[in-house]
Amino acid sequence: PSSRVSLTVNGTRRTVTVDNRTSLLDLLREHLGLTGSKKGCNAGACGACTVLVDGERVNSCLTLAVRLDGAEITTIEGLAEDDRLHPLQQAFIDQDAFQCGYCTPGQILSGVGCIQEGHTGSPEEIREWMSGNICRCGCYVKIVRAVEQTAPRK
Ligand code: FES
Ligand code: FES
Image (cartoon, rainbow, N blue to C red):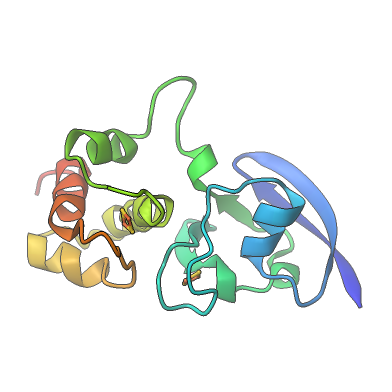
């Protein structure tokens, strides 16, 4: 069976009909053409698919799209404003916090969530609260620095 679902994605209302088993990740990638969110494990273990749902970070591969009717979704494609990168996107460039880049959209969305949650008191705290996002290239030190650069000073 399939269902209609209406979501606000990066500020734009989108209505699609999807199979009830469709994940939010597949809705974004396959139905809306937003391929910035990456599919790593498709099982909740790597964080490559992280997006914000109503301001909270979630693994979109584990989230059923049909349960999100009316929700607001933010993906990597929605972070920059006009021609200006989001400060955390800029920080990833400044700190050289990626190599292959496959984990990066998820790292950045997770970092935005981490900063909003206020879990940025120390590098250790950032590492702990970003631990759901795996980087096969091992950029962790620089990823933590990028989050630190962006977090408000306490
Ligand atoms: Fe979603 Fe790995 S693809 S957690
Ligand atoms: Fe390659 Fe993180 S930059 S997996």
